[in-house]
Image (cartoon, rainbow, N blue to C red):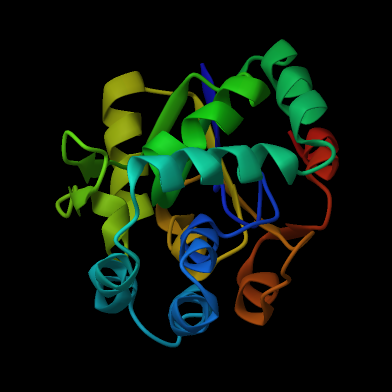
Length: 210
């Protein structure tokens, strides 16, 4: 078994789910949250400094999460579905590892044929209003994706692990993967492009590498 792990936001889909959740709540909320997301993705601030703050500002409902699920699908990376299918034929098992939210990502994962999603659960009250999130989940903090990959390696004992992503949180997985592939098809990030072993701008460009 070989694992190929994908970031979701700005990799499998062009959007940043947390920013789209903020956009639903108006331009002021969007501007505040988008600035925090950008700084975290570029490595200017630590993810844990902004993760809970963004959600406290937005307070997303179950309906909001479903709306973002639709936006992920509407903005899917053009080659993602065919690439993941081709990888599966070559013996690669795909996994999504994200600092985004499981409920919103699940429809995109289903569309792409990805069974396993490692992401943060949102919590909702019986009326669908926001009641919190899984603050203990690794991807809510810096180094979290590295922790997830260590766990997957312990559980699944893969022969090889590849990580594909656009952000600094993805770059942090390098010590535990056989190959880190930086992705810049939507938002090329200078640090990721500089430090990735390979940098691509279309997901189908993975295929010759593996």
